[in-house]
Length: 463
Image (cartoon, rainbow, N blue to C red; front, side, top):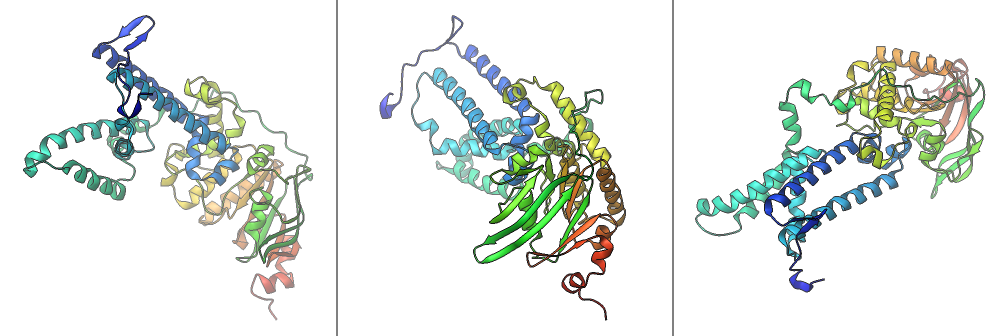
């Protein structure tokens, strides 16, 4: 392949019978390919598949729970990046007519990373901005630093090293977010998230008949070495029912919650959902079956809008793939997904925040946003992990009314919660855990007077 000295005498490009042997011609080709790459990448990132890719930043657990095939998304990122890198190398070779290993070494790799750091790693336009700035800055430093410092030396390397440290400490988002903030508010609104209210509604799931058994745990035991987190737990959730799982910290609620959603697997016992065993199933497969969840610690994508975060929850309800997204052929489906996301935001009372960044919302609003995201998947079972944490009194009342309305529509709701006033006024039944075991189950008024519960959870029965 040319040996250590590289490959020489590379012919000029010939496209459709035309020799591109002049600098001007190859220049136009490079810019055409660059603009095409920007268009394709922007289309992809602002689509259903793009949201799945960006969801990886929020963690594999969250993405899989929304129905995202994280392995496939990672593979797509790798293949698309390799395609653009191959095109770049092809253009470079035919432009220079000679290639050797030097331009592809560690130094250039660091430059490419620095370009992304300067412009902003989360933006296509930020990457272009960073590339332009670094290219001009390096040339300027090479020309003027020797004159200023009074001699030759690797002054530009020292300067760029200090600049990298400064950017990583003070400007981790790069320069592009600053450019966006300086732009007019009307220009900052992302047109790709505009909602077409005339779009068709997404098809909805047929809810099971009220009272049907949907989710069941039979003698579930979860052991971590010598620690038994759950011991022979039994639990049943029916359509149209709101069930609370309560207990003190360390009682095993979160472990049970994760097993019910297929994030974790029981050591013994069985969990069945829609009359199917969850043994061997992933959280993504369970989400596809009709189960959705929120998290104890909010898992949102803070730089994405509220609308985009909720649209991620509807990922399983779309079908268009990478190619359709990259070529912007999924517009009809995208309009339907965004319309559904807007509906769910208005349903939970966040309609006025659809274009706000999720990270800019208060903690209580972020928890409500997670519920909207879970609802956009059109589930028949909804698992809520401490949904009232961080909410004000009026927000808790509104949430309780929403959950009651959802249960009347046939949705089965299981919640883990520490706010007993919220729980007692909302749920149909309560399961109480202590040291990994169920110590009581019954109606709210029964649990309030249960001696075992008062002793273990509420501080002891009064004499």
